[in-house]
Image (cartoon, rainbow, N blue to C red; front, side):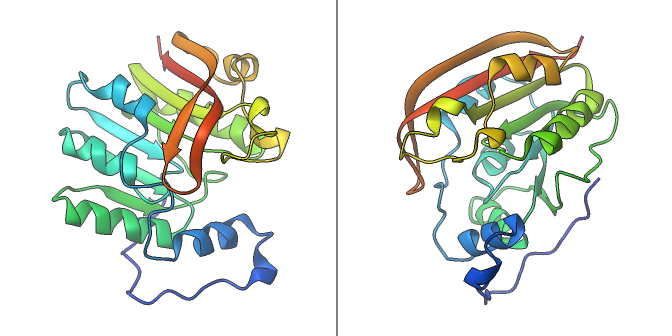
Amino acid sequence: MCAKRKAAGPSQVLVSQMSQMDPKAMWEERYAGPDYVYGTDPNSFLLTVVEQLAPCKVLCIAEGEGRNAVYLASLGHQVTSVELTESGVAKTLALAKERGQVVDARQGDLATCDFGQNQWDLVVSIFAHTPRAVRIAVHERVVRALKPGGKFVLEAYTPDQIARDTGGPKDFDLTMDLERLREELAPLVFDHAVELVRPVVEGPLHSGEGAVVQIIARKP
């Protein structure tokens, strides 16, 4: 599992614009300011999925600034989050403290993180866009990490989002669709699988109609 990190100090050093081609540097800079750029409320699709779920052991991947992990903790779940950036981890811990919750927030690269085996009742992936080769490896590890009967909840942008100006990646390789997800997540059973256009309003960087794919998949 990825290493646990302490929250960063109150001062943040902005990354030079020359290093923005490096994904970690880009996201560090994006999360360095005081505002939560995707808001502090949970993703609305996740909200509808987990409201009736009994407390369980949850892993949130590519968790960003912590909005989903903190919400899940407020429902009584035992939550671990993995996020590429130290600034995102710091904001996750700050949000959890503000709301009186506990999240085991860890910094780590999805390309190398080991999620364990038969360990999680629920894995959550909300707009966790990575290059295809990384995504395939991540999804293989998600399947391995879920307990039998465990669920994987995912929402991501589809290729149809690229032409929109409401957020999300502009590279096809970073998007997802049902056909590719079914291949990558075999042998999970898909209990919910849909591509649709819906309002995605999550802070200043997700604002408007979004073309998304949503899945709820279960490990037999």
